[in-house]
Image (cartoon, rainbow, N blue to C red):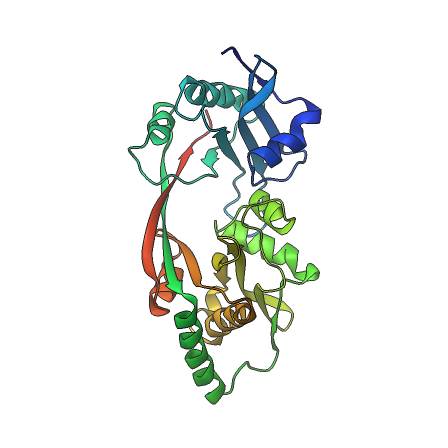
Amino acid sequence: MPIEYRPAWPDETALVLRLFRVPFRSGPHLRIFVASATEPRERVVGCFVSCATPALAGGDGRERCYFVWRLLPGYEDGPVRAELLERGLVDVASVRALPLVTQDLLESADCPRAQLLAAHGFAQLETIDEYQAGFDEVWSRCRRIHERLERHGGVPAGGRVLSFEPGLLPAIRTALHNDHIMNTAEFDARVGGENAERVDLERSTAIVVNDELVGLMAVSPVAGERGYVVSGRWVDPGYRNGWVNAELIYNSVRQGVPLGLEFVRFVASQKRHQETARLAIRLGGEPVRRLIRYARESQ
């Protein structure tokens, strides 16, 4: 079957983002390259979508380009996969000399996708562990932690426990991006409801002290809303050993009680988020999956 590789046409943007569940929003930093079958009728069968993310104040000062590389069933294991990656990389390099980072995570360094990435100069950037615990067990442990906090005075003066209110979103976005928890492109898509794991703004928790953001926990409904995934968690270094951690998890989990959830899932980078891993284990979480992110410096 003849396959054409080309930049997406403007009127294909919305279709591609929806069809392949791309976790980026359309905008000036987005570039879409597609594989299109030309017979018996023309249709997009794969995409290579990249999104440049700016360097934000307080971060490491580096711009990066995140990308997804996805195909329809029936094309994933054929030659189109390798050809789309190669041509997509050439296309993005023609307009952006930035470090490239995979948005999608791989479950094995030996899988065909990992081998193709390695052949194009990509190396493992980080390993990410997922932990899962039964919701009832998490809620029981959270209540006990909260009760101990209340006995010691509760939330101190000047502290407020809030949902992800609109006025807080810029600070939340920056904190998640700069700590390499969730890049700005992914955050914008999740908040905009354009991602399979949208951030639940009402049930996510932000904590401010004297109007300064000191902690946040983003939760996303998964598995047909049978569970929560803690898709982003950040605490200011000056507050990591105190009440903020307890209030973040207690408030976010409490919001899920009326929903009849079955489980809570935590995501933690081995390199940067050991505290989240320790929290997951403390709440009864068991490791369920290990994932790998790949990256390549600009060429």
